[in-house]
Image (cartoon, rainbow, N blue to C red; front, top):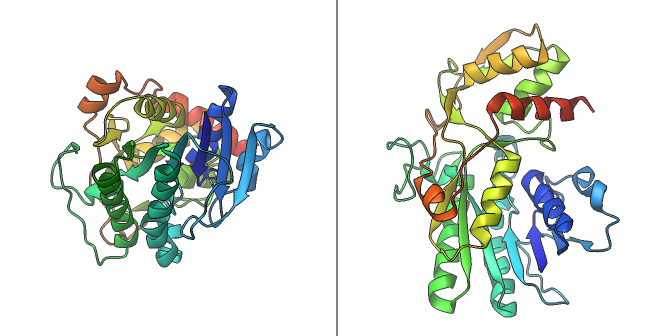
Length: 307
């Protein structure tokens, strides 16, 4: 296949590029590098089956050669990024999704949207099934990201119903692994970078809020299985093992053998108190569930931060 990946120089996007290249596919990486990193794609940039298009997907783009699959991963996904760039975040989810769907429609290509657990907001239902409509503050500071993804899902579903575009929607829960930026702003890279530097680990609130952490290899397997499935409604992919951020911090301190202390800061506005996916649909539809234990995945991620 010839696969176009928007946001292909990002954390998840670059891993997808590498995975598909290893399988013999042609990969077109489209990225404007507002948060993507050239270092992420350097290991395979000389592969003749790989090509890079520097472009902002919120501006229309039409490939010169046919595309078999469009994966739309262009997004400003970490809180520091979407708080710094609120308008580009909204554009990536709305105009960017519209343009990516337009490419898929023109080439009769399949389309996969990278959505997020943030569509559930600060959930009132736990764990979160795909049938839950969410609890989102659309005018709060996190709304620019949450609503950009809700808009993107609406567009994907509309293009499927109205134009027959062969769409998939994956709702990605907290994912971690090599190639995350040390200043990403999310818990795993923050804690690892601070622990390795001997700095206090920044905890917001009292650290009892929970998340569920999925290693990148498990997520990639789930995405590929969803690409091959005949299913058009959203599918949760994530690890259903729920832990507190305090426990995560303590685990990273143990694995890094760091003596860092904890630094408590106020909880950000609209920060979810609990987050855990219901992956019953993914198990039934895709035969998928995470395999990598948290400490194993964290150890691999820590080693990548030392390089």
